[in-house]
Length: 126
Image (cartoon, rainbow, N blue to C red; front, side, top):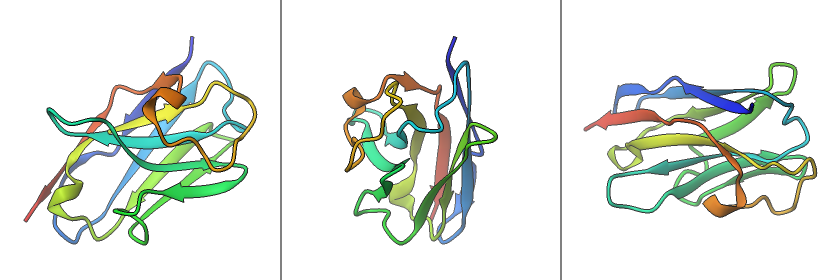
């Protein structure tokens, strides 16, 4: 049974940093695309970042501030978030593509991903 478990969310002041982690279990995702999305109430789930063998991909709104990385030995993906803004506040979800093959560019729509974590809340105070 595949599970993705996020951690690292919390409350931070604008300009601050947080690092989200997503630990996967049940199978390896070392060759698969993994991503981060975020969502606010009443809004669609929004692409944030993805990583696969082709590289890393970011939404324009976070480019230069967020960094996605992975530790394949730990089957874990991270999202380092710097210079946080109030508009970054959301529930952040980790996601994984079931395919063992990477596509380029990485998929950026929620329907392209098969596995999801439960989400972790990020709150940014102004």
